[in-house]
Image 1 (cartoon, rainbow, N blue to C red):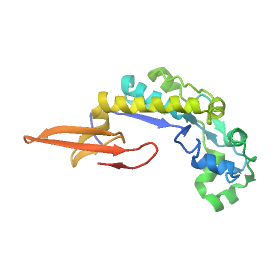
Image 2: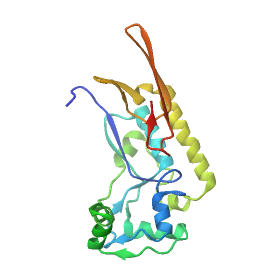
Image 3: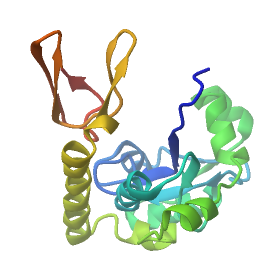
Image 4: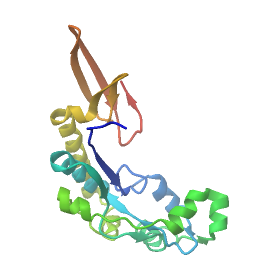
Amino acid sequence: QTPNVEGIVLRYGFLYGEGTSIGPGGDIATAVKAGEMPIVGEGAGNYPFVHVRDAAAATLQAVDRGGPGIYNIVDDEPAPQAEWLPFLAQVLDAPPPRRISEEAAEDQFGVQAVYYGNQLPAAGNAKAKAELGFTPHFPSWQDGFRNITDITINKRMRQMVDTVWHRMQTDYPNVIYYPDPAGLAVNLFVPSVARWNQAGTEVSVAQETAFPESDTTVL
């Protein structure tokens, strides 16, 4: 426990759009197009989705005005697997997904496939809307999914994500790095440089990363 330290936690829903698994060339999109992603049981698991563009906007809102607490960054409509998976297949011009039992899903894909596919509870965004002013550009996953392959939307999204990372780098460097008893802690994967004076010596650390396309960073 760390007394007198407060923080903001953003719990993002399942991201979709450019650079995500549910986007052009993404793992889930590829599996759906190949007919390799089935509906599990009744498909009652309620997926909380959020377009990556909306997730980026919510991140800025949280940094600018968020109070300490936990916020769900999700759209307005939880999506049962039995609804979103066939819809995504239709958008991608893929074959309709097959159905398998919970037992078969656990055997083929593991217990998490059963939880997400048939048991995942819904998540709401009321707190993020009320306290952060979060207003998703795509309040419905259906509207967002229809735009997954829209090149213009993807370009705008990329510009917005780049703006978020630039602001984090220039306006909020203490969000990216913070002092740690063991040295310097890296809190976010953002291309940036941290500089400080230690015992009369100028110290700098540069971070290079292609996040979110890559999940690694180099210091």
